[in-house]
Amino acid sequence: MILYHSADLWKQFRTKSLDNMGNDTHARLMSLYKKVPDWWYFILFCISLIIICVICDRNNWLNWYLVLLTLFINACLVLPFGLLSSITGQFLQNAPVYYLSVIIAQGLTLGQESRESYTYITIGYVLFVQSLSLIQDMKLGHYLKIPHRSLFFAQCLSSLVCSSVSIGIQYMYYNQYGMNNEFDSSFSIFDYTLLGGSIYTDKNGFFSDANAENRKLLWGFLVGAILPIPTWILSTRFTCLKHFHWPLILVTVSWMPSLLSAGALCTWTLIGLSVCLTVGKYSFLQRHIYLTSAALDLGLNLTQIIISNAFINVERLFPSWRGTQDNNGYDTCTLALTSNK
Image (tube, rainbow, N blue to C red; front, side, top):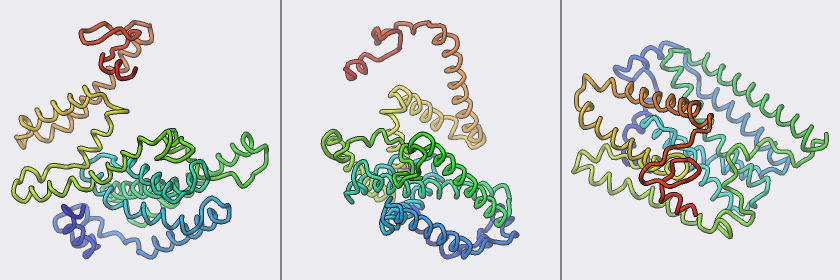
């Protein structure tokens, strides 16, 4: 963010007005509405901050100063991750912020299974994700020409209703099934399981014993921080490297172990490069690229539905192809089966 976008960000911070956006039609039209004063946001933030600090500290969920710490750290991450998401159109923030919160919680020795650790991770993570969601909604309202103040009150009302309903349902659930009709101090509104806590299971610490191998993850933060620097230096001489986007590359590769197969990524790369080097070179065809991408995604989903209903649901086994071996009818790479064993 600092290397590639610091000048634009500094210019934006200095102007801070929709009146100075040049030929941006959306900004000029939105400047006709009454703006939301900064002190509205400030008062709302102060009220929310006081409430969450008092609730966490009084219920022994987390000390108030640790609440401020996790809020500060994750608030600093909103701008760089939000910038990357707006440029790439990809939701890049889940795993890195989650792991960073886990590492900091372990560094503070809050305890693996303690309410303090759960609350620390959840408060910071929820602040981060909800801040970006708010920005996305405000951006959508900007394009739809919804007045600033109307959008502000709509966001406040929806947040109040959703949070009240969520906490109320969770309270009734624990009150009926988990606490024998008694609301004791072990209850926490910050349900850590919503974050996918299955990968955070070692009772002696995230980087010890059963999870000792996870220490290697720490090197990922250092490598990811250093990689853009030489690329930025070389881009001053080789203009083609200005389009080399390390965050997007790394987050795509990180999907492979759990969500994507190597074949899917290779297919994406092949089709993407083919389109870029052929159709993408002609400006009058570029507007059809997004439509083609959506059509490919739709075709894939429809194919999965058809295969599921026509073959899997009627117990028709997958055919045996060269390069695969018998795995109860599923198409599985021989190397994958060997590695699983």
